[in-house]
Image (tube, rainbow, N blue to C red):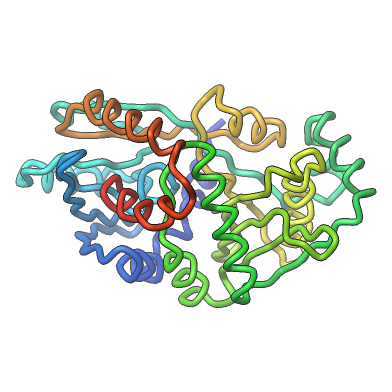
Length: 315
């Protein structure tokens, strides 16, 4: 099927001046922006002695946004690259094979259609996930929409723990604060409360008729209660009440745990590609994986201090 309309919806939230403002205030990046009537891309120069200087599409190729799905914009970027001495990292719907010296990695992007009624959405979900949702109704969970200081602090503490578990690198706390401040009612924290304790939280971003499941974190201690699955279902119902039509579930690599879970929700699955033009990706990947192995062994206070710096260098 041709999902051209859905592709245009996919990263709508990130084609805004507000998003660029969040990134500039959080990471002190300067950007070079390209735009046409149908598409928008902002590139920023990341300087790093570890991974090499390069231009990346923001908000970072692994975290949605910056999708190139317009030939006119693609030509403009190619022209810019030819005059630039830096490698360029972009995310695209269809890679341009005419770019010189490029490495291409395939991802899958998930877009959940929440326009149908509640019963139809529920019945479209994998049977095992439906059973989990039913069982969680007996857990006395509470659904909360709140972005006060306590909610932000709890989300960030869970973010740090999750990042350590996967050997990834955290965003600075001010990134979440800036995002919630600049977007006002278009950015919310939704949480699962258990015995008045916040045990899972999502950062949800909204634009027109589409919402983005941007950050999902939870406490490992309560994993057996399936708070994340329960919270996702309640979030879908909450978004439906406000007349949203799509939920962007983000990108995942094929055969990863998040890929398999998202697939069970029966979403639209779109091919997207991370393209690195003008660099040796294998060398960068090797360095990154070495640091990730070491990172898993670090205590949380070290992650809080140095993690955002590494994130900025990685892009």
